[in-house]
Image (tube, rainbow, N blue to C red; front, side, top):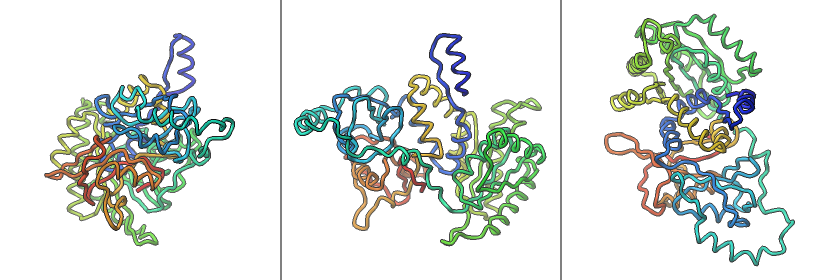
Length: 431
C-alpha cells in the first residue's frame, strides 16, 4: 500500500504496479454506522452488476452537465473526472471539456458509445457555441469546495467495540472524523488495557493524528462471557445517561461492532478462520440477547466475519444482527483497482472523510407535501435538487428482508417505496 514500494517494484520489474491502500478500517467504520451499506459496496464492487464506469466522450464536448446527467436512460451519471480530480455532482452548467471523463454507474463494459440523442444535441449546439473559444466554461468547479471536509453531524454517539487488534487505533481515527464532539467509544477485550494504550499511543505518534472529538473507555473482559458482556452493557448504559441529550433533545445513539479478536485470528489454541468467525457470531448473538434483556436501545449491531456464508446464515436467523466481510470487500476493491487503476481515486474519495460519500437516507426526505417520487427518474431529479446523486434504493420485502437495488432500469418504472425504505445517494451531507 506504500507508493514508494510501488515505485521500487516498477523499477525492478519494468511493469506497472498499482498502489492499493488498506481500506479495511474505513469500510468497517462506515458500514457499522449505516446498516445495509456493506451490501451497497458489494454490489458496486462485483463484476456481475452495476459498477462505476469511467468513459471519455469527446463527441459530447460542450454539453452542460445537466443534459449529460439525464441523457443516459440506463445509467446513473454521478460526476466528471477532470485533470485527475474527481468531481461528484458538479454544477448543472459545467460543460464537458476535451480530456474530461464521465463517471457512470451501469453494467460493466456498457456505454462504450455515447447515446445518439446526446450526440445529436452536440451537433445542434455547434453553431450556437461558435465564437465562444477562449471563454471559460460555465459552472467551472471550485476545487477548494470539492475537496473541503464534509460537515460532521454534531449529534452525540456511543460505539461499543468488542474485541481487540492492532488496527483498532486506525478505526478510532476514522470514528473521530464522523462522531460529534463528546461522543465515546468503549472497548471490551481480554487484551490488557496497558498494552492497548501503548499500541494506540505509538500509532497516534507515528501518524501525528490525535483524537479530538471522542473519548475512549477501556474494559477488560471476555467477549464470550455473559457476565462480562452484561457488565460492559451496564457501563455503557450508565455512560449514555451521563452523556445526556443534545440541545435538540436527542439522546446518544449506540452502535456495536464485534470484531475478530487478535488471539482468535492468530489461531491460538488451534483456532482457525472459521473458528474465529464462529466466536464472533456467538459473541454477537450473546450481546444481542443481553441488550434485549437490559432494554438498552441500539441503532446497529455489526459482526465482522471472514466467511460470507456464515454471515448470511447469521443474518437469516437474527434480523437485528448484521455482518460485514471486510476482507471480501477489500479483495473486490483490490481487483477493481488492479483492472482499472483510475478507480482508486474514485473509491478513495468515496471512502474518505472528505468530499462525497455514499449514504442511505430515509425516503421521506425526498417526498414533498403534495406527492412522493413515483419513478426513479423522479427520485433522481429530487435528489439532484438537494445537491445529491441518487444511485438506487433499499426496500423492505415480505418477511422483513431488505432488497438493495442499484441503478434501477427502466427509470420510468413505478417505485412503490414507503417511509420505511431508504434511498442510496452520493452526497456531502450525512443523514
